Amino acid sequence: MANAELNKQAPAFDAVGADGKPLKLDAYKGKTVVLEWTNHECPFVAKHYESGNIPNLQKDAAGKGVVWLQVVSSAPGKQGHVDGATARKLNGERKAAPAATVLDADGKIGKLYGAQTTPHIFIVNAAGQLVYKGGIDSIPTADKNDLAKAENYVSAALAAINAGKPVEKANTRPYGCSIKYAG
Image (tube, rainbow, N blue to C red; front, side):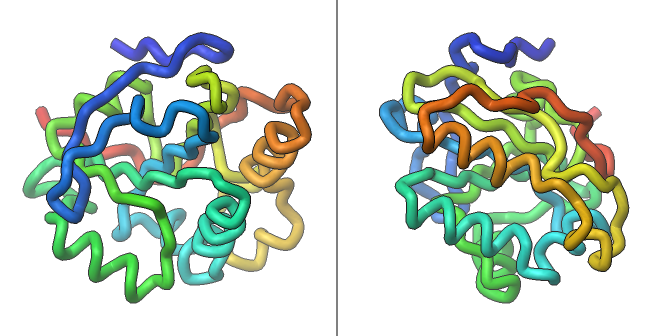
């Protein structure tokens, strides 16, 4: 049951990062946090990584003090499941720059947030409230050529948060591959 509601406290979680270290959402209180559900085998995710779109967003966000967490909720034996070493290797190959990668093989965090697709983005503000959930942009295709024409919802949301303004399009339709949950 998802309990991630806009303008409410974001659901807290404890997890293990790809580096094997414990990771808690509460540790980032006071900072904006982006949660990006990912599956390296999904063509929609590949579009955003191969084009540099997500790595550039990650680096830009980090430069502004935003914490970007990748979340992998693919279950063992299902498409997109990775162990920590593989997640770190993929991030190196893709020039990705998340602050950390959350391994959620049992899908508890994904289900807590109601994450449906890869990519699916959730943004938590410095007060710990969920202020954005949805797609990365406005054109739901796996075609890299669409990026230039798309409205990037994530960069718009981060710009609004940075300016102290409400996120105009706070709830958009996520698109991509369905998350391969256990069960």
